[in-house]
Length: 544
Image: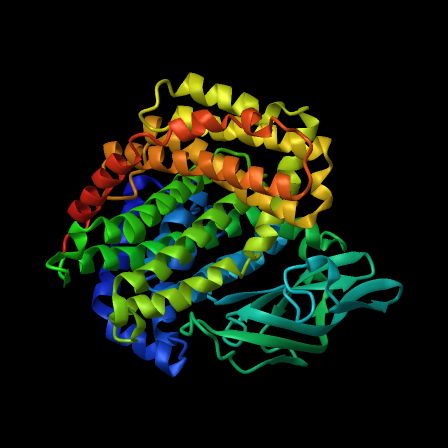
């Protein structure tokens, strides 16, 4: 399995946190946000090999890096997002920018460009998105016209516009996607190439410490050796190949941002007296604003870790799983930040309290690197094909494996299996009644699939392989997994029944097929479990 050893990874994380304690205090971060200022010195520090060399973590050892894996990407991304999502975006955009070279470059290109990035600590940008295309890379309009001499292509002239590019105005190196005669292709472009103009920084709602700018290319000439992979038409395949990694990274941003806000809400409730008692003693506070968010975030973490381990174990084809991880983690992070504002009352709506800024920052994670709606569509499309290919056995078999590998229901495995079996029954009904002709049904299936899969993975990992990345004890994680399994089973059954009936399903016994009585019976003990988790959150994050 690739990646750093635990000691090195923990040292990197500890060093980042120590640097943040010294240099990235809340007052400084709020000032960057207010001024809409890119912290060039901070990025210089983080890329300085004598201090951090953070960019080296994501560069293979053979090209001068440390050779970090997907699990390392997740842990560092979460840590950076807990500190500040804007700075995290600026730092880790370099990783995204190098991905086309890492995945599709020739050995010579990798040595040249990855070595240069490692040695010089270059900021890199990923030039894919366009004003009209958004995340739909297949509709890009940027052109790469071959320059031919003596019957041989010696270079390309690139013309077009890119939009919403992280590090767009400050990078030294860019990977740019353009249509060559052979199809979409990636090209390496240096910052000072003639005809290459960077737009002014976007005035954004959040992550204002990151630089986001449009790129304008007017007959920008690059030599033929800047064509990534040396063959035209590989660009979309190369972009798809890295989605498992990059969506895992953005999911980790949502996880870190969500926990940064939630921790503040947990601590705040232990100091704020309301109605004759501390907020932290009131179920109206803990069971609505704290516990559900902590449960969803840890369910997302379990799935992220599962995907990261699969990638590091030699199975990089995790595009669907990466979509589930991003969808659940970013939606959970956004909701946790929203509820953290509510938890602080009027104070949370003021800029003096960091939860206001965190909410604005974390919102972008549901948009960039594929919107939540694109994630829903991707998940539903891919899992629908698996359901058909397996003749409905995919989720039923998963349920059987889950119950066999995790006996009992201490971590909610039996309840998560109910969710998987209900999902299989719902997909069968959608097939028989052709309900996916309605686009909305397909998208809602994506959401339900994400809940069911995260419930299954959380239950299994909480029982057999609990995370070490949280101060919550394994026993607490098992209780949280039980809560999430209940939520997922109820969501699949209730929402699935609603949308199936709304779309015109024809089975009068569909509630029975979904096993609604068993799913409702599984809700027994929910409040006691929530009481326990509320207490454990307060123990783990005491008031400062």
